[in-house]
Length: 216
Image 1 (cartoon, rainbow, N blue to C red):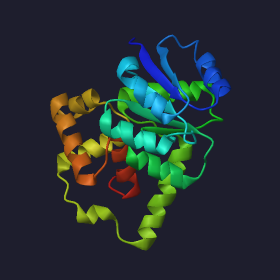
Image 2: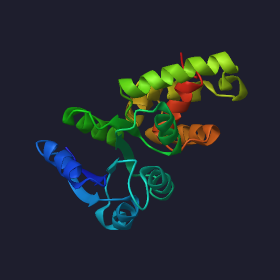
Image 3: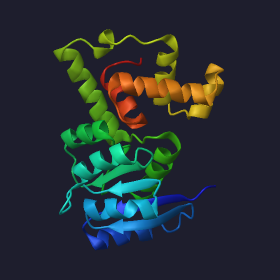
């Protein structure tokens, strides 16, 4: 099993060390960078080259929101899991839409943090019950205010199938087998869907699809 390289950005050193220590038993996770703020994180990314970042939101100098925007644009292959105390659904929606791949509260168990790291690395996103409740709430609210945006977007049968399978947490290779196409074709369809929806990654694609009722 490949070792997943992880960076953590949080201005509380005790919390950073606690997370690192709690994940030490999982030998497929290796921490390659610690940072106290967004600027420090960004400055070290070229050298540390993490696969996944655990990102706090409230940090001095450059906060987690602005840092997530920058990294999602500059390093699109790095996956970001927000790890914060903020339970406000507005933060969840905004962070997922600007490029975060998952959202965890700091009360999460080490096993869930590990699961989030594994899933964003393997599938591109992690949606727990907390985030799913917000998605469901927003989906219902969207129905009450205006018709679903799905009526404004034309999707092919293949595109709908890809969205469905992604939301069912299948990997690109697994989707390719089910659709009897190549993984490269699946990735091309995903890229086209993200362009149509204006999303930055697979997590944003899932978030958009659920929020706008594009899947049953």
